[in-house]
Structure formats: structure tokens, C-alpha cells
Length: 309
Image (cartoon, rainbow, N blue to C red; front, side, top):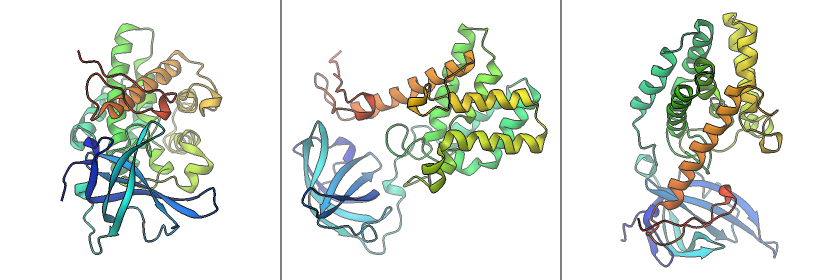
């Protein structure tokens, strides 16, 4: 059996191995027949495939281990597996070997993030941020930052946050007019409600709250609840809620409003920088120097060149 990992597969290669179903959802073909889109994964990456003439998401459910074989093809600038065979491995429940994780251990991520929180000088802000992280500790340090596009791995949220904290630290050194505590708080809290928006750390799907409310409004509510319990200063609460609600930059990109604080503007930029750099890393995996990546939908459907330098 071939043991080439998914992350190393190229167009024309053959997959023939055990993998995990990360996502499973129904579709309807132009001829009216149902089909399933499956995202298959191992610890190196993931690939999309189709199961035609089936809508059985119970049989092909998330977290199930399957044996799959097929040929990797190019479909509209993206790799896709042309499935030849797929079978459920009954009784196999150990999904750890198939789960992709952040490149930094969970313990180091927690130590790093808590170090930034401990260094905060504003007592009320520090107390509020600490309480919010503590209440969601296990999920905060294990959940991904997204279902698919960026940092969509085990502990991806914490990895994203720690990278952003390092950027924020540098920006505060370069621009001392920024309020360091406020920006650090915004970074730590901006995506914390992903632990409510998403279902779990391994094969996340959007929850009902995630679909109807979204993590920005969910986080603003969480800040309000905990702040009332702690008696946090109202201006602090309002500023942190503004950072969370505006961190997508524009209403058409999902923000409740546009940033109206320098720290909110900076939060938007460093969030975007880190997310995009992670998407670049993902796109360049397995790409030979001197060739282009697949088209990346989240990066304006562009393909990117990998220099030989």
C-alpha cells in the first residue's frame, strides 16, 4: 500500500491508504442526483473528493476512518481526488494519527499567550482577559481558528493568536502611541468565540450559534457577561467590544462596523497578515520551486509562484 501522505500528493499521483473523513456534506448534481463532498485528511494535509449517487452522511460521517484509493486530478486549478474506492474501517476509533496540529506544542502556545497576558499593566483589563481565557481554557488552546481556510488545525487558534501577539508586540515598539494592553487584549479575545462558533477541535463544523450569530457578536456578548460579574470599567468593556466587533475591517467582510481606534485598525491588519501568511504556507506545501500553486479561493482566487531562489 502506498504511504505517500496527502500533503505530498501531486496531480497524477495515486492515493491508496487509510485516511480520516474531516468533513462530509451533501450536494445535488445538475441531473438531480445526490452526491457527497468529502474532505479526507491525514496529519500532513487534506484533499477533497466526491462520492457520487450517495447522500449518506451517516455512513460517511466526520471522524470515520476509511480506506480510500483514487487518482489526484486538477479541477479548476485545485487538486481533487477522483475516487475509485472507499470503504469504512469498522471499529477504528483512534483518530490521533490523522489529525493535523499546529507546528508549536500546545503547552508552548499556552505559556506564550499567558506570558503576554501576565505582562499587561491595566489591572481591570488583565483581570477580564484572564477570566475569559480561563473559562474556555481547554477549547481555547485546542480549537482551530477556522474550518478550512487558515490555521484550520488542532491548536490552530492558539497558534494564530500567539503569532499575532508577536506582531502586536513589534508594532507597539515601532508605534509607541498604540496602547499595548488594549491591542494585546484585542488579539487574545478577537477569535475566542470560535470555541462557540465551531463544534469541536478535531472535525469542526459551524454550530447553530455560529451560523446565526457568528463569533464577533458572540464574543461581544461574552465580554459583557464576564465584565458585569467582575465590575469592569465600562469604557474598557466598550473598547474591547469595539475591537472584537470591528476586527474584520469592513461590514461587507463581516464586521459590525469599521475600526474607529488605532488599536482596532492595527488588530485588523495583523489578523489579516497572519491569516494570509498561513494560507500562503498551506498553498506552497508540496509545490516545487519554479512552479505555481493551485488557485487559492480565499486569496482572491490567485495562483502564486514559488521562486527557485
